[in-house]
Image (cartoon, rainbow, N blue to C red):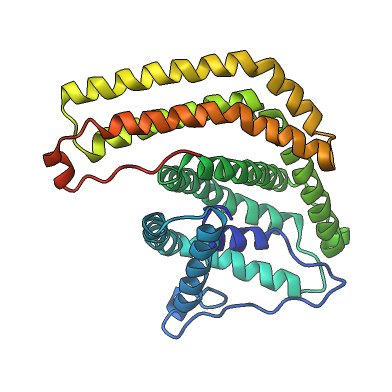
Length: 328
């Protein structure tokens, strides 16, 4: 799940992704609530619909990224703050587009080039604003995540970015009048299939290119040590002398861990290549060896925690400081 305010993406995407003419036109999933008709009537998500969707997205994110209670509360606050506000602010642009989309899918004749260009011209500023909102919201959400959660989230954002780029390319084409209505529904279905296949291909290619090696994963782990020490200093409000000690311990132990990495780098590369094709007993043997390489680094992190734990005074501990979470 991506924190991309799916209700907005679903609505705007639907406008430019009509169903195939081979299938019956989809009925509007939501209708305007009583009292909402003064905005122009037609299709618009009800308050309850949006609330249920937001609840579902938060729950899906909670499961996908294994969020703790505090992270879930922060995500919930972010979603409930921004989704309704965005929809209220841009309803006057969004609702007519949604209505025109459903009107077009119910019409046996395809929309004209001029109609499609009008959709794209009105949707493009909204889409660009939407992208900025997504960027800011994702940054706020990512800041609440731990390193392993961030890695999974970053992969999800890669997929989202590819989809957004392709969507923008299509909008720009329609703004230029590049629309063929001769096979309106069937053509869109084929384009969706090609787009989805292309997105999967690009995602796999980019993910492979950006995947850290086993040796580089150690550096990622060491970066997490920096955050652990910073969190520890903040948790106990360490003074300048204590902070200097904590940072000195960090520098010393990271240097030892990097030495282990360098000594084993060649072997780690060999294990990584072998694991790509290994099966059964051979794969288990390589995995056990990999664990053996990582174990001394895990031991150093345990030492880091133990040495840091000796720095706070009894008064600092009694003040309510809580040690940060960390480690593999």
